[in-house]
Length: 397
Image 1 (cartoon, rainbow, N blue to C red):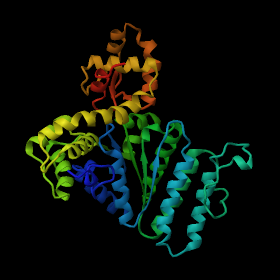
Image 2: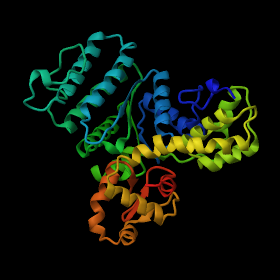
Image 3: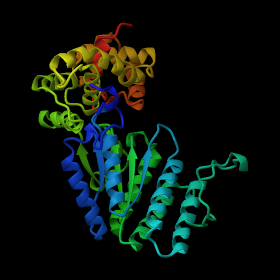
Image 4: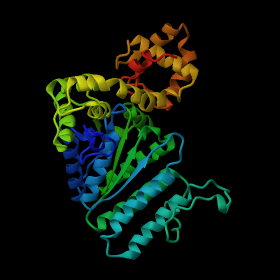
């Protein structure tokens, strides 16, 4: 098969494999857009799931849906311990530009941009020299007395309210999409919840769509007790066999090629139905197939190449971030679960390593912060990366 035409290569095709099986989520968001645009109350949305299930790709499609409906839309990728003001300012600046092309009052748009600039400028620490201050690239004077108190919770409520009113002027809304939401700092999470609460009280047309790891609901709940009323939680999981087959067949058939039923069986067994793995093994199988259709033998021949690529890019890059003590903890988890995608009791890990549970808390907490493991419930721990245990057991250190 022609590697240049490989429909599983990153960016190939019109509909990425990760979106197969997500029709329910797309339809639900369409309803959210319609309800909010009509001034009806609607909760913001939070997508949760393991790495490799396609949350980021789905988030991008939701953004595109909002833009096609005439909404303003901006996207933020949260980073651990990073200030929210800068990336949020850039995202809302993009959203306001989307709205500006439909707004008939340039002065009104500039006034809101002035509020946004005032909010953004507070990202600089007090006492910072002029040359050290970040400039947000908003070509209007900063407003005074609005969203510039320095208290992120107060400022975010005021900023969201003003931006939502601008969208209301043109009969649409604003979608703010936040990826890796669990990495936001506690103060920023709290401010975001407070702003969403205020918007829901006002019926304002601004929706936050967050995506993150399975423990994100617990992070939100720990920040604000009322957070469960603010968001609608949607768990994104691996694909069913039917949807996994569709994720393979659709791109193959677009290239007017074929694949045998046995090859589909082999791809599902190798990938476990996780979209990222479907793409990785599908790409390798396409490149390995000498003739059309792709066969089970082609999948078998290609699997080691896909495994090697995943070991470096998907698994290895995360493993390298762990310290020796953290790697010991991870390997213990893998041994206790026999490499399966299953949770394990933290007390079992301590027993397995012959250590006191309290002595392992720093390593566990650091792994959670790095996004390598998560705690679904008290006393339980699991990998955030599918097949990570299997990777660790097959690794020769």
